Length: 301
Image (cartoon, rainbow, N blue to C red; front, side):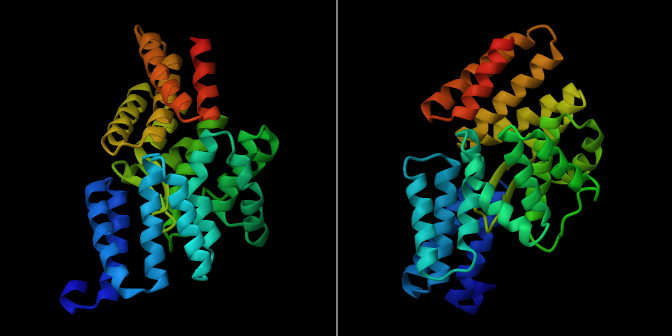
């Protein structure tokens, strides 16, 4: 429709939304095509907000693939947004790097920003992030209190924006870390309809990996081994196809954790192979948290 209208501004906005939709479908070829077309448009338009969107999406792809220029691309988008006075630009930058900071053992760097967010409003997404940050930094009692606050509402989250699916992925992660079997059914019901998608928020900047990965965590929590294996296999296949090495390494670690818990014949050998692959990725990319988790599981096997 935008092309039929011959309005390049509307076309640019449409391409930004098409990029996000393609990312949700893990169709990176379409996402890259939409971005390339949009970059051509904004070069002629010279509108700061539209230009920022293309820089933001460019950084998303670089981060997903952990390219050498990923951090530089993210910083370029951030600095351009600041200069263009784009509202809440810092939130977009924080959300882009959350999972990568976690694997580097640096997720605590996000605490002040998200604590400020929930001090202003008990926004569920902010509470979920802070629960993960607290748990990863050894403050289990605080994390449990925050998670219980969410569970008491049946994990309610506004559906008038795209953060809700990301919220449920975060809650599934914390649920698995706490082994909260009681919360698995409701979180599974919220995630399951979108099992074939990637979780994408913050205007396609906050990518949290496949929904299938989070369903694998929940299935492992309740000991549904066949379902867990199916979800981890699906997540790994997607991550290999789209060349997302850090997300793939985390999937291999959690898949291995599930195999070691199941302890069927050959499970230990399969787990060791997955952990060896994850460990190679962690060491190549200086991911201290991921490395520590892989080493701990290898030692236990």
